[in-house]
Length: 491
Image (cartoon, rainbow, N blue to C red):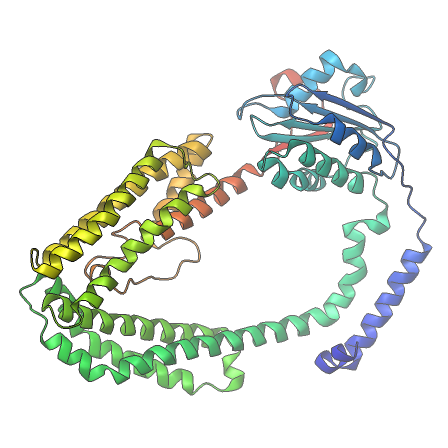
C-alpha cells in the first residue's frame, strides 16, 4: 500500500482499503457454499475415445454446489451435424430419464457434457434448476477446447465438467458479477490514474527504443554517405539489376534529408512529449526510414562489388544468398508445425527442392568464382529458384488449407490470410524491406517466403478457430418444441 500511496496519492489508497474492508464484511456475512460430489455419473461413450478408468474417479471427486447428475455422451459425427439434435435424439431413444416429464426440457438436477471428436463439436446441457447463461456455457466448453484440440478427449471432458461444477448453481458472492461489482469502485478510483500512468510509461519506453534504433542506423548511413555515392557512381547502368538499384539511389539523398528532418524532430521531444502516442508513431517512422536507408546503402555497396567483381564480391554474393538459405533452412520447421501437413506430396516436393537448391547454390558460387557465369546470370538463377520456391509454397498452402478447413468458407478465410501475409497487408504487419539486390529490384510481395507462410498459417488457423467458436442453440428439425437449456460449439 505504501507503493500505491507514492504512485496515486493518499486518498485512492484509503478508498481501496475501505472497499477491501467492505468486501471482507460481505464475504464474511455470506452463507457457506455446499461442496457435494455428483449424485450420479453416467457415461455413454459411443465414440470409444474415453478412458473410463481415468474419467470416472476424476468426475466423482469433482465438487458441485448442489447434488447433480452428470451424464457424458460421445459419438462420431460430422462437421455438418447439429450436436444438440443428436444429444436429444439419443436421450429420447436411450435415456428418457434425462428429459423432463412434459418432454420439453432436460430433467432437473442434470448436467450433460457431449463430445463429437470427429465432427469436432462439444456441447453442454442442463436441467432448468441447473442451467447457466449462454456465456457461461461457452466458458464451460472453452475450458475443454485446448485439450480437445490436442485429442486429449478424457482430460478435456474432465476439464469441461470441472468448469461446469464451478458455474452451475454458483453462489452469488462467488459469481463474476459480484466480484466485478465489489471491486469496480476501487477500480474507478485507481484504474484511471494507474492506466494513464502505465500507458504513458510504456509509450515513453517505446519511443526511446525506436529513437535508439533509428540513431544506430542513421549514424551508419551518415558515416558512409560519401562511400555510398562513390559505390553508386561505378555501378554499370547497362545491367538490368544495376540500373534498378541506381534508380533507388537517385532518391537516396532526398530520403536521407527526410530522415535528417525526422532525426531533428524526435530529438527535440521533451520527456513529457515522449509519453504521447503521436511521439511514438513519429519515433517509429524515423527508425523505419533510417533502417531502410541503412539497408539500401549496403545493397548499393553489394551491387557495385558483385557486378564489377570487386575484391569483396564473394561476401556480397553470400549476402544475396542469405534470404534463400534462410528459407531453405526453415522448410522442415514449417512442415513440422501443427497442421503443417508434413507427410503430404507437396511437403515432399518442398524437401526435394531444398536438397537440390543447396547443391545448386554451391555450383553457382563455384561457376561465379571461375568466371563460367556472369554475376547477372547468377542473380537470374537465384531469382528463378526463389520464384520456384514461391510456387511450391503456394501449392503447399492449398494442401494445408484443404487439411484444416472444413468447408469453402473456412478455406476462403485461410486463403485470405495467406495472401495478406505474402502481400504484407495482414494484421499488425509492418512494411518489410529485404536488404538484398533482389529485394531492391522486386517488390516485397514478389517472393513467398517461409516466414510469411508461417505468419499466414498462424493467422489463418486463428481466424478459422475464432469463426468456429460461436455457440449453436436449437435442436434442429427433429427437436420439435423441445427447448431445454443447451448449446454446442466447434473446437
